Length: 458
Ligand SMILES: Cc1cc2nc3c(=O)[nH]c(=O)nc-3n(C[C@H](O)[C@H](O)[C@H](O)COP(=O)(O)OP(=O)(O)OC[C@H]3O[C@@H](n4cnc5c(N)ncnc54)[C@H](O)[C@@H]3O)c2cc1C
Image (cartoon, rainbow, N blue to C red):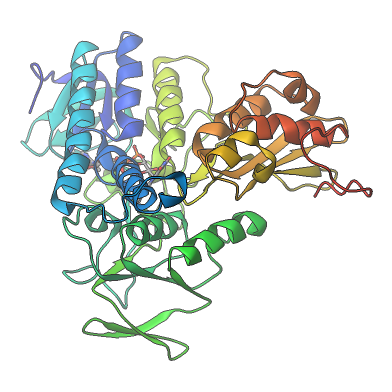
């Protein structure tokens, strides 16, 4: 598919139309550059078609289904509500389809030439497309993303699913084992457990080990309530048919096996060996603050340059790289990249809770009127600040934490103090009040929670 006639040379070529790439292409076109965007699969890349959006679409359906069947306490009798997995699958596919065509529309409207096919570097200034066309470019942005990391002892195949295939099932497996300890494993477990699948998580390390373990405990408790069995500190050793044996001797039988042990940079077939672009020992492309690679004219963004491998990071980098390619002095100098786990309840963090002179105050969600009304009491907000009151980090474990964390990210980027947050009027009744209350408690003036005579705020 070529939306327009393909030029022999272009100011900017972007390889990969994931969330990083298409945003870079649009920003480049807004600045007046001629832009070619090459994509070998689907516009929107993994995020819109296989990962973020499908998983959140399905998580939402599973949440509605689970809550509907468990709403008797509110006077709703829907215990026998049923689910049509084929319709659920259709909805998930339609959502991705709508977003993909939306990206196509935005590219076309901005004058971006979209080319369907793979791109291979022939040199530091020339690309070849899969139809044989060659394009000379002044600047290039590599946005080729990542691929699921395979386990050598459990290679992906018909009975070992990667995250893409796990999010494309049009049936509900009776049982599922998920090998992995990160957010993808937790979100996939939450999704299927709510749909009635008996889920096992096999985590070589601790579950979500890079997150605050007090927050992880809340999520683990809720997973266990959903019937999820968590095997921590165990690795799968062998597989015989539908049964896997762990290295501690435990055997588990499941209908579906998912491997979700991480993401690896994707540069297969890109021809980087024909360029002066350098990679690190793990295969991630090395870049500087302006996202420029070891070649002045080639930039790289998103998952292919490494952690954090998150869509919103790729999006911001898309803007920065396009501006830097245009000649602006833009830099990827953001202080925070919020991270969200779409678990039950959601868990989100912006900034850090760690540091020598950092003080932390915790405020429980169970003291928030909205949380009581909605029966969403588990969780808390933690606010971390310097002695001078500057906010360094906020963690939220609560219903809708993924939306709430945006306030935290903005506060930290702006250098806000706990007083700024405490004195800002937050709408009532909302979960956002927990952020304000945490800030008030940090100032020693808590209202809706009594911390005891010792005033222990941790
Ligand atoms: C299950 C799951 C859920 C996730 N949920 C979230 C979430 O909720 N929030 C979040 O922030 N992040 C989430 N992520 C991470 C997120 O999906 C990635 O960080 C994001 O997609 C990275 O974007 P990208 O533009 O770097 O690459 P991608 O989205 O991977 O896009 C790269 C594109 O490049 C194309 N391409 C590759 N090589 C070539 C070539 N040679 N020629 C032409 N095209 C090429 C590919 O086909 C692909 O479309 C999730 C990941 C997984 C696995």
